[in-house]
Image (cartoon, rainbow, N blue to C red; front, side, top):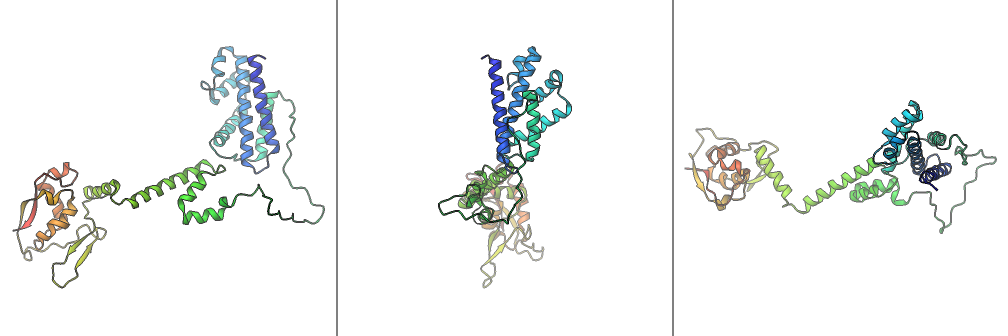
Length: 344
């Protein structure tokens, strides 16, 4: 058997396998219909390569290598050498789109009758119009000649393979979506009947859950530190902190939230200010590793209480007094000398 005869025999084998799967597939069996489409489309591709190589020997090396010619080139050569019409080209392009979806894990999206028409089209090209050995009959329920009797219930040892397993049911998936989201994502990803889009959504949702769990289990992670540093750099918003009460007998602490206002302390008027601010050198051990909000809450605020300085004023003035803070990412470093305000 020559090489050309072997290729023709392989094409015929794919065609017959596709027709057989199609003849046995139900109307709503998207998986089996998809398998039939893969075989039929592969047979048509082999036939195009064989015919184009015969009609245009100069293109033989190109068309016989699938890496060098895609379906777009085969359709163009088919119009030029095989008399392929525009309507036939559109049918092939649509079938190729469906074939790519099935090859990436999806099901056949159209009706069985549409695939039957495409199968007849493939036969005309591959067999020269010879009649198929398989008869395609519509899957309809015959009329009942007597009152319907429900089938007997299966015994405990009999398993109905046509039903979905309980862990694939809609009720179970709905429950675990709310109670155990990671389990829901894994169930969708491992279901071969799910489309690519649904699996991609489940995979993205699983990645978000893993990221959230990582942050919650490790509150000292670099992600949290970087986020707080970004807030301090871009917005100059003080993080929530506790301010000691200045009046004896008052509440021990007061929670200040950046959500309410960027500046939570009301500045005193010049007549109410009880001290004059001066800038002095601060200990690097006391300031090291802190940002402006932390230094304001822990170090500066108790020392300038009564001066009328606000958090916003401190954030701006401390950068003027210490230009190195900008280059250091708005973080006070050990081993450096910084100027900080105090009441004189």
